Image (cartoon, rainbow, N blue to C red; front, side):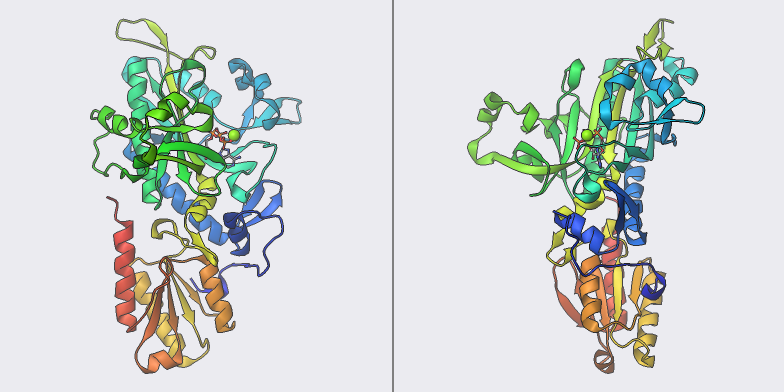
Length: 447
Ligand code: ATP
Ligand code: MG
């Protein structure tokens, strides 16, 4: 992609109301533009990151056996009257009236709608287990929208719903999602730790928040530091095998949100292993039994022909929040340092003398060589000053930047900068392309 034909409205000044790095960088790098409090337009650069996150989420959902569908953003109030949540939900719900005076709402979540969809078609235990998910915009009229896309009012969420015959079977579905989540975040170049969360009225141990540990996080978490060192389960994990040992390994170590913090249990954690950190909630998984299936009458027949309400769970990931969260986890004073799997482009090319026949030809050849090997390139072919081009590259945070200038070319060299380490190396254009393509290939390999 040539920068001259792309749309990248970067800002020199830091917008006044942006309090944290990710919000500032997203505005300055031309990733988003605010339209109202907590409501953003996704500009081309930001959208590319959002789509990459979505793709990873989708792949890992499918691997775990969930099936995609798409529910609408607007819902009829009648569904929520059935579950009893229409009144209970409060002012976070955006209520709308259509021209016929019917009560509608912009969905903050989809438990009611998915229950309605499933109840008419799923009647027998033979159709279970079932996991359905979608990736759709939600609206919550948050009291304090802030930190850009991290706490927006309109935001993109992946939400999965599981349906089972018994609590034991529902636990199996929960464990599948638990493992899928560990893999999902790891593939984005971060480790989100599962933290025991408030299970709500049903009790039990089946509610976890996945927290990305960063200084600016909104939540406080208490954890055994060993938890952050456990790597994600591999891609060849059999989701139909017994996942209890894996779950046990992750949940044996103390990890609680501040609401769930337990001083007595905390005292049992060796003092040197206790850490209190801040983090960003990027996912939340939840088993809630028959909370919706009971009032909404979603029932199946078991093997003995007995009618039983479906056992359900729901599993959310904050897709748009992750764009900000990943920047919080990976950035320096100049901008984000995108991990390769979620970077908007893998590599930038800076032409130091656009319009010069040699540098133009070298840049174009390099673009072609990289793209032929699956590397996504943003080629700065503009006539802007060199300093401006370098600052812009750092601000958009692509994993690699290749600088091509007339002086280097005379010696047959270009300069390759690795954004994550700041390292610079001179090499022949062919070698640069091979080096970058290899790094990208390795980073995109699913393990
Ligand atoms: P929070 O405690 O941060 O308000 P929540 O418990 O209300 O989150 P869930 O209902 O579990 O969130 O939603 C699933 C995921 O959606 C959350 O883990 C989070 O990553 C994301 N999310 C929730 N609210 C917002 C928001 N206002 N803006 C962006 N992402 C959000
Ligand atoms: Mg909330």
